[in-house]
Amino acid sequence: MRLIADLHIHSRYSRATSPSIDLPTLSRAARDKGIDVLGTGDFTHPEWFKILKGGLAPEGNGLYTHDGIRYLVSGEISAVWSQDGRVRKVHLLVLSPSLDDASRINRELSLLGNLAADGRPIFGASAERLLDAIYNASPDAEVIPAHAWTPWFSVFGSRSGFDSLDECFGPYTERIFAIETGLSSDPPMNWRVSALDRIALVSNSDAHSTANLGREATIFDLPEPSYEAIIAAVKGTGPGRLTGTIEFFPQEGKYHYDGHRACGVVMSPAEAIRANDRCPVCGRPLTDGVMHRVEDLADRPAGFSSSGRPPFYSVVPLPEIIAQALGTGVKTKGVAREHERLIRHFGNEFSILIDLPEEELRKALPARIAEGIVRVRRGELRIEPGYDGVYGKVTIPLPDEEEQLSLL
Image: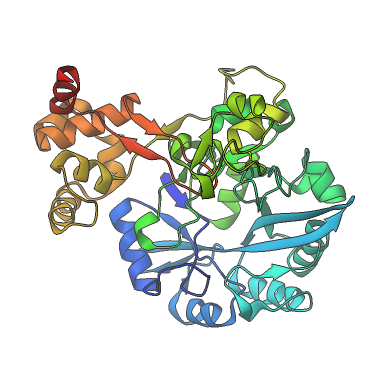
């Protein structure tokens, strides 16, 4: 059974999130996207936890359901502490085998920080201390380093992270079996670091609104859906398998290149090194991006191919493809109407973006939309890389645009 899972999202109780997020809107958006298992997000927040307890029906296998969508209990926490003379800031994705386990985890974590302050609570405690509390409360809970390369809040972040998992997690390092690659890196970038060969690479959206659900996700082949089967598939210890990931184009991520947002400066790692990692406009330090950080830790060349690793599918969200095909904004009524029509006809977005053969695409979809999807699949894009908190810009060069460019 193929299952597509997005296990890292947020509720309306996290800062900078849509106030309209609730279980009905999440379930509807997941169904339209093609997500089979959705993380609950924010289980540590008291108000959201009440909503989860009241709105989710247990399946008896560690998963819960709402309106036809399965949910796995998950949440993100932030650890901020001082180690070896530096301030460290690491975000962690916590997966719980049940709401009862989540309740016990919440009791332990409440002794270390204020869970009601934010859906992604901040703790003045080390990652090791937090894992100790989580595993003591729920031995079958699991922790995955979130968006592992983001400069400011991640295990390998250039500004506040570490050079190895062991430095961060100490005696719990062997329990870390996966990392979340994040929007600004993709599997080939991670394959360059041999220390990660034993680590599974998973992808999730970290969505702060329903529109961003599934912008990254993980694909499983499981005999039966359950919490235990999903964890075993990631670990590679069960009959099920992790069969692939759905990815952002990493250049589109908002920390891919180096740069300084205040001055509008963006640089490749090589350019930044030549500039001594200083902004050429104001002289302040650049924010080293994910690509630079991978270069720092990599012991394999760019383009290294890791045989036996699951495949990945780089996508652009369907509304963005429709908008470029129509020559209009993503949030216009025309895009919304066409998106809804295609979802009604084909069932969900992933069926269109990933599964539908090219021949059927061209028969069933408007020509420019079909051409846009085909070009995304081929990677025939123009991308201005993201940097220092600014998302990259993706352009799909459709035929009439190519003709216009040739006349310039």
